[in-house]
Amino acid sequence: MLEKLTILNGELSVKFDPLNTRYTVNMTTQDKELQLELDSDENSEISIFNNNIEEDQNEVVITVYSDEQIMSYYLEVYPMKSENVLQNEDYFASLEVKTSTYTPKYVAPLIAVICFLIILFLFAILFKKKKKY
Image 1 (cartoon, rainbow, N blue to C red):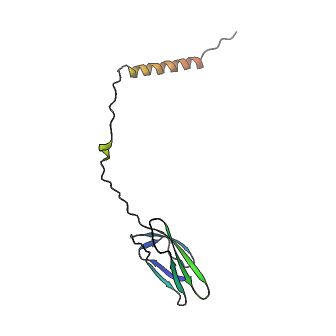
Image 2 (image 1 turned 90 degrees about the vertical axis):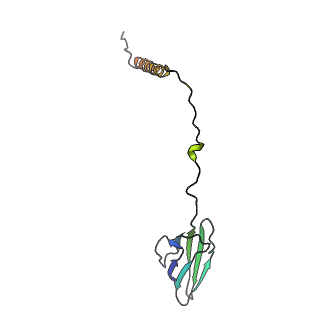
């Protein structure tokens, strides 16, 4: 069982606990390999599998062999991505402004009159007085 695990070029998601076997590591550098500092019992042997970091999510397995038991620790490694945050494009220059066509001055009052007549018609239908015979 590991007694101490330290990631030199990354950050563990939680503090290391020897009984916890799954961890998430966020790399802080653009290295291609996870640099580990491991401490274990004197009688144990440590094996590290899949320590080549690629662009996407990777899983590094640390297996500790001792006379009595075998313990594996799984590290999900997310490498640091370099992205261009600022792009030197002038977005305002690429915007096209459409020229509006001329609308006559009587369109707005015409729409208002039509809406008023529709409301008046609906009011007359809904609140029409019924005759009793």
